[in-house]
Length: 501
Ligand SMILES: N[C@@H](CCOP(=O)(O)O)C(=O)O
Image 1 (cartoon, rainbow, N blue to C red):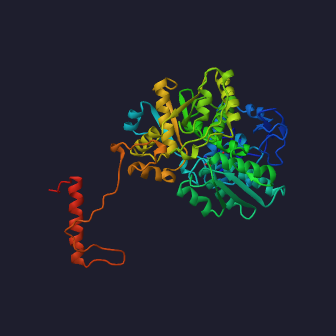
Image 2 (cartoon, rainbow, N blue to C red):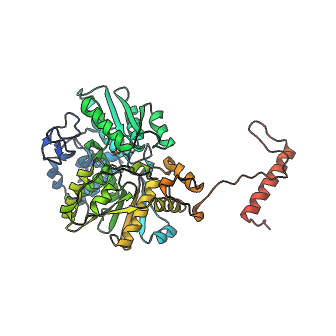
């Protein structure tokens, strides 16, 4: 559709123009800092930052319904820069001109309703949002598109050049960072730090394939994060973890997409997200708060944050019912199948504390809840989901297991509708499925396979067969006919097939 074919009321807003007045705002001392250089913590007090639009109120001059139409009409545009997370430009990164936007196909991931069997088992109507269908197969691409678009903007203005991006990762962040940095070659090079042997082979292959410098460090993610923080304090590098507030802005698109997908009716919705470094739950709350403040959504949805009992510092913090008595205590994590969330000291914890409070106050009632789940339940629910036509990763299993806990303890009721986050592609974590099927989980995980969920390939080589084909060694037609008959008879027998009459 050409722009002159859109309704007149929408036309002036269709193609976003740079605007807004973004600053870093410190969550500790509230000081604001300019965005001309990349800041990760407040130079005055060391606390984490969020990006704040000092001119946010200008967005309220457009009513909520018109905004809804703007986003809906923008769906039809063929301009790459607004095909991804920048469809919500005014809320994601208003200062970034469209020609600086880096679009690799991120965002607008499918929202898939669970089939009847799975909904019945789960006891609630629910949808998976498959963020594994992003370019590097996780939700981190949303944040990288934002952070790298901003860096690209700085490069184009001649404010920076030859950037070295750096991040600590349990796998997904490094894959996303390396991918987006590779796209901006030669201006950006990337280096990633991974905890040695705590990243799946598929995830390790991703930054290697994108040409990043990959460093493996003894310890766990939290140790890598400390090294990355030290490097970013001492050297001229661009930190790409979600400590970088531009990452949070991009990940807010997850909330905007859910709102748009459900026609902006959020009153009866529950958004379920797993928590690791806590950047995602931060972004999800902040995103919904912005849409609520501008009247784009009718209400704030419930948010359910889920952690494994093996890495549950956020859950532990909120398990103290009296707010004044809560103390955050970083923990030492144990092995978890939700490996991307094996984090004991989430960098966004101060943001979570700040935003949970704001969210609940804006809603006028508690709307943010937390659940902890066992490793066993994570695996069982992941496999159950996938047996019902999904591609949930272990974190998708964790989210679904958390929804069960919330239904049992009454935080969520069966009359609501849940949107469950599968943060990455199931294939990144297929090794855990193998361990489950082969009953080979090391003791630390405490996972025992449910025989009803176990599966494995069956090798078919009937003993009567004298010859079988091999690569480059086809059988002669007669021997091949014997082979086909013997093999198909055995498979038909195994499957209990009846002959055609
Ligand atoms: N799960 C993460 C850990 C780092 O998270 P980030 O969002 O702070 O970058 C990963 O995939 O590495």
